Image 1 (tube, one colour):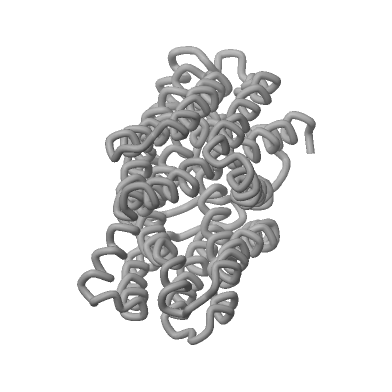
Image 2 (cartoon, rainbow, N blue to C red):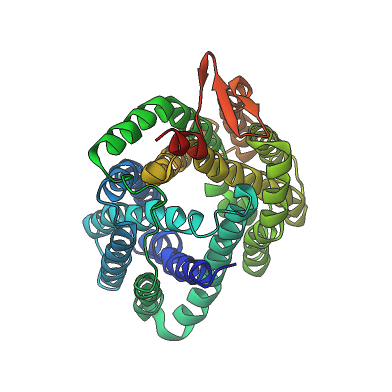
Length: 408
């Protein structure tokens, strides 16, 4: 693996360590100071702004061909916003900061994976992105462990410490260059941009299909996982230590399965990766509702981690298959939007189901698993040429990068 690829992996780890300021520690602070409902609102607003701005920033970074700059801006401004959680104490402050972080996280979410995908053109896409996704999981797990340690000794100064990792991520990006395809002298000329835009319009429907698959999958998955801490503690009577160990095991399983599932996705195809990921998610969520001991959930956490590894590796590889270099960040923006839409709706849906069922966790898990059916159904509509990584939906056929660039 190239030196610059390793730099990008370090940048991704640092960025995700700081990410825990938002999705973990800030949510806990808001829940303790005000109300757990505020934490749910923060999650919804964060993912909502991330979905919208992921598409916008992806398009802009492709247009200006300055992904590195967009990534640096996002990392630096996000760090400043993380620091503000130290001073936050009102609903307005928590919700405002969540929306701002959603905006500027979009800068790095759309650009860093696009940059990384271009550093290793000879590596199979599923394996390549599985390495990247494993590193992201490592960052999340490390952020929670480091944050718990720092918060124990330094309390809310934890936001300055973890937030500083976002600055480190941005500094690393200074040493990475954008590497757009320069094999064709006129690649950046007006006619080529017109052709690129034409290709983007052609594959837009394929990207929208991905958004639908991921949105329904995340709605169901994150909906179920959002209530897991309360389920373990209130319903299954897990101790704080047991709950912490069990919760961290989810990330450990994800790290273990990420690269093997990436290799498998290269062999069996992206469509089958979607089907396996969705099917395993259904089994895992239904399984959450039938266990009688906190430790039994580890079996279904393992299946859930395999499902996530299959889904995210297939999704990344699918985007790389159908996008050209000049539209790759936009493709990653669609991927981020699909994840974020589901992330926005899932916790709200789970909360509503718990309210309607009188706090019946088992019933809520069963009902929310139904939302995976649209994801599975849409996946089955895709026809895939595994050798050339071409896709067909109804009568429309995707073009991959090599074909389009050779036609220029």
